[in-house]
Length: 269
Image 1 (tube, helix red, strand yellow):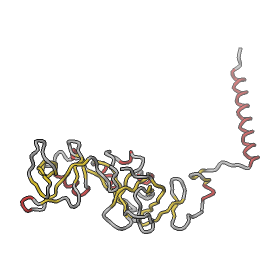
Image 2 (spheres, rainbow, N blue to C red; image 1 turned 180 degrees about the vertical axis):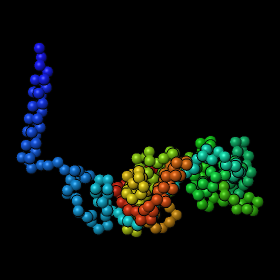
Image 3 (cartoon, helix red, strand yellow; image 1 turned 120 degrees about the vertical axis):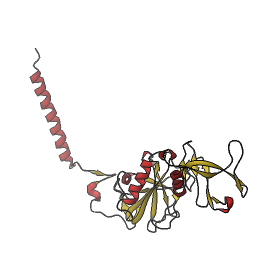
Image 4 (cartoon, one colour; image 1 turned 180 degrees about the horizontal axis):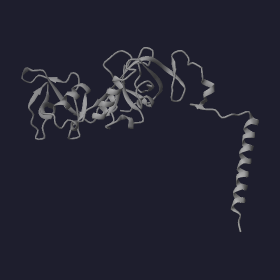
């Protein structure tokens, strides 16, 4: 008859012996377990500062070009379906109706009247683009005005996507957190982190903004209407994205965030 207690005891003795031998080997080699920070031991970088003009990335503990004092804001694009109770209002859309007719012509372009939810149109006037109930991207730019009946009136047009200045399409998603890199608008030019200028295609980290946005990588693809140290983060489409944009914009550090340039990704329109 097999004595299970004796077998268990023998196995336990063997495990202890192996563990002891491993510990002795580690001590003999002079090695001790250490925490890893990025690709280095934490003990190697603790207390060390980055070179002038660089900051340490909290994620991988490497030093990159960067500076503090940045204003970080968020922006979203509206979904017409989020405003079902709003009144319908008529707006001019560039082009012609399905039957080929139109309601107004100016400078060799034609326009027709179509109804949309009022708040949806107001948000497009601010953000530039939005998705209609027909799943089309409706857009209006800063100078998109015509003068029917002598009155300055905003007009709208359809696009294949919400396009950034560099030609890249913003992802049609309710949250940009689902993307590998999150698109942002910047003061474009030759990258100078001290002056607040960033080349399109630059990958960025912004460690001081609210979680989970502070752990993501950002991609400079668009231009903002400013000339200072300012980055505008695209949060997605719809109400939840609007709330995320508000959180990024209104919560601390607001206008005193660190920004690091951590790499480059080519933009392919």
